[in-house]
Amino acid sequence: MGWNPIGKVTVTTSGTPVQINPQAVNFVKARTMFVSTPGNTGLIYIGKKGMVIATGVKVLAVLQTGTVTLIGDEGAGMEFDTTDLYLDAATNGDSAIFSYFD
Image (cartoon, rainbow, N blue to C red; front, side, top):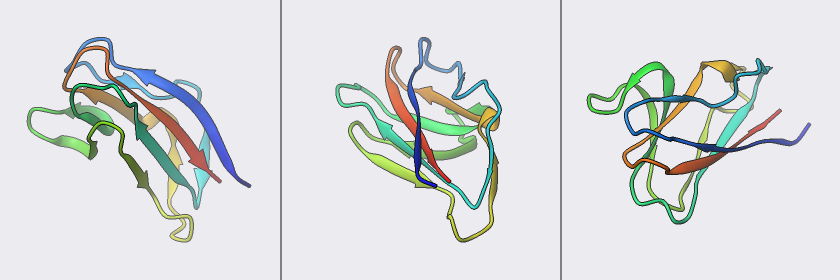
């Protein structure tokens, strides 16, 4: 049990969500952590497949540069599949670092 780093995810083209982890990792009672990389020039969006940042459809969280957000609650019995999580950015080339705790 502990933090499992997936690594840095970069959005090449704003408006085109990037799958955070194409390798399936299912975990229960877990928490995910996203860190918006310092040096980003715009907002980072975390969401599910099919998210649209212009309307907020399927967006789970929005991060400003250098901020951290946690999604999930290790005590709530939530189940995640990392292949369901996507990242998008307001600016081409911005990124975030993704980890999960199980």
